[in-house]
Image (cartoon, rainbow over all chains, first blue to last red; front, side, top):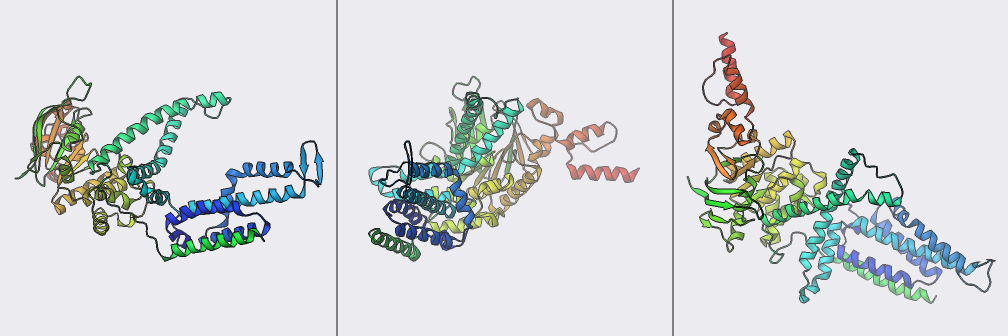
Length: 256
Length: 277
């Protein structure tokens, strides 16, 4: 999904680090105004990305139950001196409602911002960013370039292994294995005949790939040049400055 | 003709194997020729490729590439002269996109980025894949992936290209495109092509065929000479080319000139006969 909005064009290193940074500062918000401010910021970023809002809502789906559970916990267990409703160990109060609301917003903020990162950054860009961020570790002989290559090859082979799994499953189905039937133990057991061929074939793919890489002159990662380059420009500085501004405003709003 | 690869008394046995994969094999390969090495599974043809590129080490014998006997010290230099296209298009695609994959060999050589950009564009233009530059491998067909693999090899400017069953996993269309492309590149880029296959029909475009059986060369000659062996080829686990089989059946009833006839020649003879009737 190549896009042309400004968020796509920002340097992936900046996006990657600032996403983590943002997840951190979300926990600084402590009142309605500060949460509203952060929400406005995230929605603004989503708007800038020009991505259909539906994709972000979809991002919430996998964690829907987790959110529901956490919110319910806060609603029912927040201690309060003026409970509106009380039954056994359950307490329902205004404070609980507010805290549950905060938790909900916090989830939404974190999921939206990380969805924004994954939608606007290709896996290979993220792997490049990690390589670039880890570069200082070279000084202590950590094999940064090799690790980055491993990461990018791993990403490259995920779809291939998915295909391989489908093929093996089809082959097993043709021999009468039913993967959807039986109890939990039986279902887990029926995955053994998938895992073993998958294991064997991934080793043979790895061997083929190693031979192909060696024949193309790959030695040990030293003395290699890089084709993909990351470029940090003015827009990335603006993003940093913007984020700093958000932090300052947030700190100010905390004591509002 | 100038020799580019010279193999002398090569022997190789896989660890823990009883039979040797390559037995006392000697072979000279000349500059700019298209040599096909054919043989059934287990005849040692892929082992030979790996030995030539130094991916495995011979038990005895020597391999000379471009005037240098390869050993541990100069193997990386020899590898820059040799490019290999392997069988499975998916198992040799290293990059996340087409351009990244072509870049891989150049990155290994430590080529500066500005030169790389040019070399990649040139190589992709040669295999007519320029418009796919930014695509990821999953969106390409097998033939397209093999063309990218060829571009990746060509970008490093090798003198020898080895095709190790490179077309065996492709559909007829992809196979034809890849073979014609290689033919065209051989004359344009002054390349030596060694193609390894078990399908004798794929050797049409080559100038010389070597038949391998049990790690030894059993026949070496021009395609016509090899095709003319007819059903003798079956002794080496190979199928007789279709036209050769057709001609030998036809000879029972009609008179055809001696020797191997390719599709065109056979057609011509049949037309002649039909106009004489």
